[in-house]
Structures are given as C-alpha cells and as structure tokens.
Image (cartoon, rainbow, N blue to C red; front, side, top):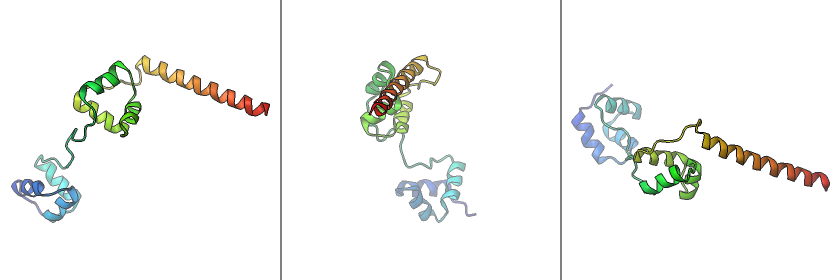
Length: 129
C-alpha cells in the first residue's frame, strides 16, 4: 500500500470535487484513501454539514418543538427526506423527541383510530352494496 503525505492529501483534496475524483488524482482506491484520510484526521466527506439548509433555526424550532410536527411532516413541507430534517435539527442543536414521549403516542393512537374507523365504514359500505 502506498502512503501519501498529509500535505499532499490536503493539497489534492482542495483541488478535487468528489471522493472518487480525489482517489483517482492520488492514485489510490477509495477505501485505501479513506483509511489514510482517517489516519491523518482529514475529513473524507465533501459535504458540509448544513450546506443545503432550507429552513431557519427559528422555523425548525417552532415546527418541531412548539407545533410538535414530526420529522416526516416537516420533510413533506420542504420536499426533502426526513433524514435531511434530522440533520437540520442536529446542526441547530435541537434535541429530537424519543419514542417514549407521551405526546407522540397520543397522536399516533388517534391517527390509527381514525384510520380503523374509515376502514370499518368502507367495509360496511362494500357489504351493503
């Protein structure tokens, strides 16, 4: 395995646009390059945390904490994945709710009941036809 100096890695990383491009320029495979980057404590990701934020900290806090919207509900509002919303909350330092939060269970239980009632009505309508 060929070792590359930290200075050379940092220089070439600054000129590269992706990890694959970086590996080609250095002449190493991507996994080998990642191991060497880790050894020198150089970030291997070309994404910056929060680079594509589409929501302000205040909006995120209001939607998630005060309005008690779920990650998926917020994601639908901004047309992103729920993982992206989770990363936004991490960047802003907003702690996420856990599954034992009683407000979440009540909302979920109410939604399940509504869904069951709709299905019962639908089944009854089908039986009557």
